[in-house]
Length: 471
Ligand SMILES: Cc1ncc(COP(=O)(O)O)c(C=O)c1O
Image (cartoon, rainbow, N blue to C red; front, side):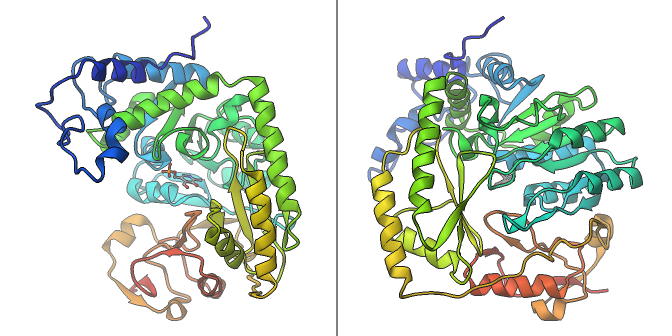
């Protein structure tokens, strides 16, 4: 039966509830927005009305039976899952829950090495024994992408007892790869595939966007609705379509990981974003693509770099010419109030929204004036990152159980070479650890970190140096 995707059951219920002008003798403490500092109130006014709690008729995220259940059902219908969970803790919560649902302490799990830290943190929480498969270095794109089919195949042959394969698809830059072959291969070993599709919520729109891993047979797929669709920050989906992974196990871990007071505005924004995606017309998609073309053309005029091609049309990667620092280029854009999503040592990532971009003329002017200023402030930079993930298949030097019992100390990065890291080192964004907790620190790691630092690329770290295990 065809569902009506213009419907937004949760959002509608919330509107109905607030229209009744309810009086609050319950949490949250802002009392439907009546108790809020004056200076901030005008900014929060509308949203506070929706920021309610599990009142009669408003359902409960952790045991949904009414409007949340209906909203999740419509999402599952649009995305094509057996069951879809609303997440209020980002894809982070989904990634943690899917890993915890498939493995316990000591279980093997095959994981793409350049995964987001939420995947790596899930491994540590579960106490699993990860087998990492290294990504390939794409010379043309000048960065790491996905693991090869042959590397995954070798990992599966060596570790047929693994509980799952965890892949990331697409990457931050919208690059996809033949993931279906990998899913089929893992399934041939009776191993389920979990996919971090944080950047691909719009893939279910169909052509010209790539196909979602969910349609390609993945067992669990996690998507940050807030990254590419009109949803509030943290609002995300977890889809299950599997004969081996039980949704009850995932529900169990989600209620452990996520708040017992999930935000209704966030959940309603998931309902709204599903409806937005499901009701987008072909003509609207054409207008979006036209606009993407305009933005790409504008960037193509910049003499200080080139626009790379990618699979997801909404991701526009500008590769800065050798000898110019991407950070410096980004800084000049930011001074002019244009903010890219991500800056690496050599690339700037611009994310186009799911609507035409109206300010192409402003962008063109900015591109030109950045170019003029750059002539006077060149900042030379060459960073060699191609050797970071050199071993095709790698395990940690210590198990998480061993690590939890060992003392550690903090040393300088250089002193750390040859020792086992007791913490991860993660440039953010994209949030992919260069060094993992439990990995042996190499000279290549330290050299890259120093170069990135000089380039002003942020690394998530509270203290200087690195913790190593004292063994
Ligand atoms: C590949 C990938 N996975 C997971 C996440 C975490 O997503 P969230 O911010 O929704 O928790 C991110 C965030 O940037 C990401 O890039």
